[in-house]
Length: 466
Ligand SMILES: [Zn+2]
Image 1 (cartoon, helix red, strand yellow):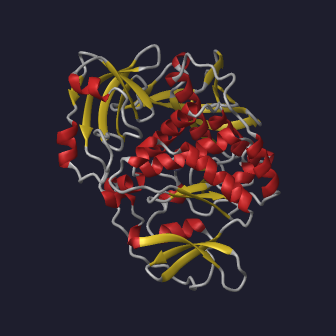
Image 2: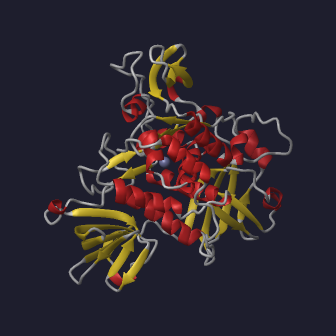
Image 3: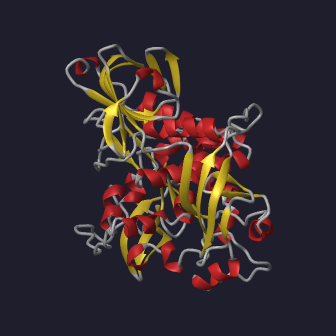
């Protein structure tokens, strides 16, 4: 089951987000069957469900199916509910109106039963209570788990630490930030998750935070033009270079915002992570995080953003990829052997023309193309939680997906094919995540924009966006 091709022409793979147009040229509608993939965000009436801004209409002729472990079976249209992951096949009737001939609900994704694994992004406040079996709360994986007497706990910091790499931390009391947690639970009506099991494990090994092939990233300068660059270096040899945006004020703004959002767990990892933020000249709406904590923010992304809350979310999402060692998890889970360093045809002094191709040549294509959906969802949950704790309006996260869909969706071009999530899937996941995880919260009074962001946009000026 692949993510649908909404429009061959316009589906584009871009690191934190994969945009796919929902706005088809009228001539394309009618002849082409189109698939939409996303989480239902609402229900308009008895025959219409909603994903973000799009209404999906059904009729008595619509076939509705559900898919679970047992296979496919029929499903009642009236049982379609917000939060369900669906694939609709049909045609656009209008810009935001879709007629579904067929709908498939993915019931394998149970939204009540929650299980997963994650590295702690901060030291748990109630670590002592968790260890002693008392009722307590554990913030992990973008969730708040509620532990009570019935929770099965395997929580022994000394044992977990001894199993893992020796921690470099020179700090005081046992720091559990960056330790691994495996959990299972059930979502309650208030949105909190009752934990059935929690298990503490060791932090990731130090080499989980290394760029393959021992590449390092350093600032440089082009000898002839004096342009500031970012160099991918293999010892002394430059394997690739990217152009840094010249406007210093923009670089500084992004660095300062990024620094202010670094989760506390960054201090507990077995290899010290130094997050660095660089704005690179690249028109695609994208940001990339490298395993060592280097974050690249494209000028095309800055140009497309509306406010600081959106940028804070993108940066938090990218930092979660680093802290959760997603690059390593993907290599391990897919058994994708590390590919050889074959950067063919790139003259030593040439600039990287296409970051996607370069990253795939050094074996980290997912940095640009997106990780598997489970990992992207994890980075989204953690990103949302991080910006909420920094006082931002989390509704701006799905709003950014809307911008990409509505304003740029039909203009983005595909450079590297990817079957990863579309902006619709991303935006609807974020929306349903907010509905489930924070049902009681209202976000009035939270931060959306700042004068610093607006000043940055002015200094940036008009940029090319693809
Ligand atoms: Zn991502």
